[in-house]
Length: 124
Image (cartoon, rainbow, N blue to C red; front, side, top):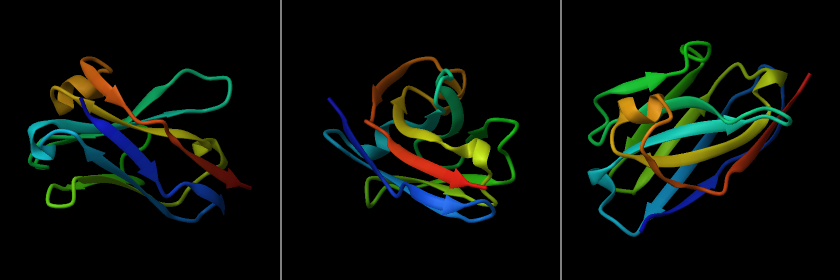
């Protein structure tokens, strides 16, 4: 069993930056891949980014690459999502996920655990 707690969401203006954090507990953090998804109001949940166990491999949603960066600190059991140049369309609940591999997470497959989400609201 893995417990995930996201933090760092909030309200900000377009063009700003925000860093989300997700802290995991319950298993050895470095043994699983991590990812971020988001769900905007009235839309389906979509993949954002994923990172391998050691952090050497990353995947991004094509539309977000270049603005968003995923990273992890295995010593702190935490994965991060740095979001820059935010746009109103980035407004969503952002969810942390644990999976078998970063590639599988990027395909929304084999996600074993989810966090409860943190809300990001970007105003124009």
